[in-house]
Length: 326
Image (spheres, rainbow, N blue to C red):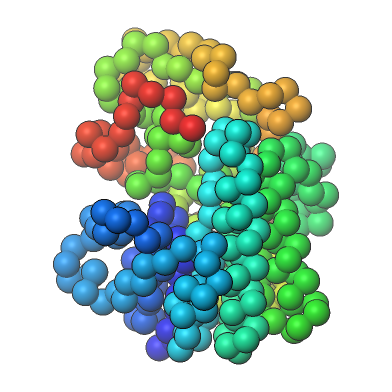
């Protein structure tokens, strides 16, 4: 089977993707962020039997030499390593440029030099900004509504340029809002659920009217694999979306109903994005991924939420419920 490098394998989507690739028989090298604690993020929670099948490579995507070393001998690279929190990008944009743009450039350069057969670069629905029409297809204009989204637009366009300039076999994978077990409290679903599970009567949230198109993480991971398996996806940018939307307010009410009907929603000013930065509507079109691959969502929103709540219930001690996580 093919040898695949997964950057950001220690993170939320990366760890699920790594797990799924191993289960499907691929040989996986997991690129994790080097740190002095020798922690491998969510990979540390894997059973020993699963972990023993994964080759761990510690490095930093901002370092071109380390990235090239990691990619040697690999058939493909799934590049997920990125800084993703939007509020943190407001006050530390330099780190987003270094990690998201320069990190992607390092992967593309190494792939070009090494002759890597396939490169999957991870994008985000945030590159579209607030929907100008729905469902949002891949031809929708881009809008940098946060420093985070601007760096992801930059990384995507770099990836496109390497395909067009050097014929590098790149696919740009664009998941809409992914949720599920292992997601950080910087995201809205864990934010709501952890507050409810901790017994809070007042659930602190930002804007309630924006809508999102939520992908369950196992469906997102499967989307990457199906995009990789199809030759038709080379040189393409492809949404992974359910083509359904729900507002943050509706979502919060449903979770309150399931976990603690006595709780109330409170608007927390510090959680509000600046007015022109808020993405008010995201509803993705999944026509292209269905035409080019065999991908279909396997989980309903209800199933995904149930698995997410069960995970958070068992791992509440890992979440700082009292804090607003940037």
